[in-house]
Amino acid sequence: MTEAITAEIFRHLVDLAALELDESEAEYLRAQLNSQLKAIRELEAITLEDTAGITSHGVPYTPEISSLPRDDLPVRSDLADAILKQAPEVDGRYLVVPDIPHTELA
Amino acid sequence: MTTALCDLSAVEIARSVREGSLRAEQVLDSALERIRAVEGRPPSLERYELQADDRSKVHAFITLTEARARAQARAVDGTVAEGKDPGVLAGVPLGVKDIFCVAGTPSTAGSRILANFVAPYTATPVARLEAAGAVTLGKVNLDEFTFGSSNESTAFRPPPGNPWDPGRVPGGSSGGSAAAVAAGEVALSLGTDTAGSIRQPAAFCGVVGMKPTYGRVSRYGLIAFASSLDCPGPVARTVGDAALMLGVMAGADVHDATAALVPVPDYLGGLEQDVRGLRIGLSPDYFKLRYPDPQTGELREQPITPEIETAVRSAAEALARQGAEIVENVPMPNTHLGIPAYFVISRVEAASNLHRYDGVKYGFRYPGPVSDLKELYRKSRAAGFGRQPKLRILMGMYVSAEQYEKGYYQRALRVRTLIRRDFEQAFDRVGAHRLDALLTATTPTTAFELDAVYGDSVLMQYADLLTVPADHAGVPGISLPAGLDAQRLPIGIQLLGPDFSEARLLQIGRAYERQTQAEPWRAARPKVLSQ
Image 1 (cartoon, rainbow over the protein chains, first blue to last red):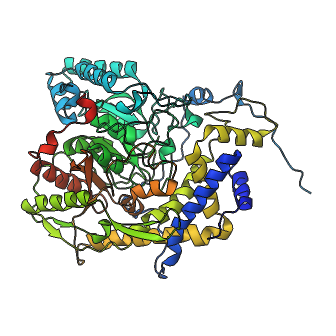
Image 2: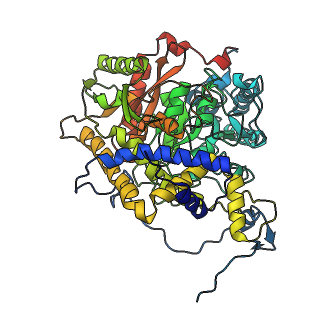
Image 3: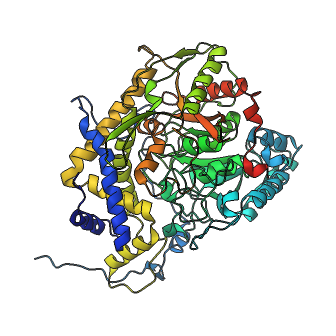
């Protein structure tokens, strides 16, 4: 069986996923992906009737059991310092990041 | 090892603490003593090399929060001393799967990328359990971001061992939860189930694990894997303990719009009702396995392990003796599609959820020089994620790409409809079968050896073959201990029911527990407790 995820497609996926892989890791992951796709292919063999709509989650959320949206009210939070404390690098109350690459639009 | 206070059920502990005949601190001391006896070296991010003692210990805890637990236990005892009620879980030792945020404690998700993350807030289920008097001993191990069925993908190693045979896996992803409960380190553990991650380890470790209906328990503060599937739920040693814990956690939550507005029944109160007249189904589709050959990809079919099938049929007979009506040959024809559909749906959701880990806002950041922000993302994610998250992100990107999305993702969502339909037809009150519950095996096999399956992501996923359909459908399920196999490893059986039928499943589970109370296997103890 030919590989669905070729080395070229795989490189593109790695780029989209914002990852970097060494050669042996890339080889292992690509083989696993192709192996998983073989399992997924079982889905292709079945006939789906037109009436089988999509289910985005199993339990139907009828109005009776669904929460109403909360009122859109400002609430003061005392968590800002605890959240900022988790940042790897800060300058005062700003998060620090390296240069952000940008492309000039023509 | 002698039986200790920490081996009491949560129901007994809470009752005694509330009455004043037992102090929460005594229970805590007993649990800490057990932890010291069975844990072995703590799991860490250090390069893992197997040591002689590793495969005889449990290694369930990533983080022990002894001081926090001590303060909670003293507060419970103080409340009792003042003549006030400390809550229905007073003094009950609790282990929290390290996928839930608990304020002020590391919340790692079993991943290097969150190893240094200290949660600024507490997840709703944990907050409710603690408000009811539970004493949180710490955070227990899991597969990285819950991605696995053996707990071996955790970045914190040694991985947990199965208390019945620590050379074997405890299952996953809530492996630390099930192992800690089985070993008596805690009475209760909060787990999550996305494809079977509560029920499968519960079965492997000989404890009770319940996946509630999707929306029964709030996901607020749960580090997300697959948001349309993730369900927090209880891991306990008895059905009564699971009922007690679920009753505390369940219910609507202003912080989670998917937590359904469905009243929470008194799960414990209705537990002893008999099962006379209840219709319990058996399906041939749950007695066989269909999976792709690892080499050729061709579909193979084989029966589940005979000892496990025997346990399921014996359970049906036990329930029939109490007046339940057993309905044979209930068709669940789409069961075998659960894993292929899950490979697609869960990966798309995981890829989306994992994009937030970027080395900027929190968590691991690559410490070396980088040229720009994109390189920082790539290097932080490359060094921070283990193989499972990488694999799931890449598959999620592939099957949701524009040119493949219709063939894979949309198709999988439609297959999910077919799986849901199987359950709707089985439980239809005016249908052919009119089931109150479906009785199945929880797992195709008992616990496998460490390193035996890890590395083969397809074979590992098929460990969830019998549990994942309920996750797709959103319906509740409970795994119950149902004996030991010839190797003295626990066997688990599973009850599945209609939406929000947890009370009924617990009631049937309790009836089975009562009926089998005198059987010799009930007196057996895990190997780590008999050393």
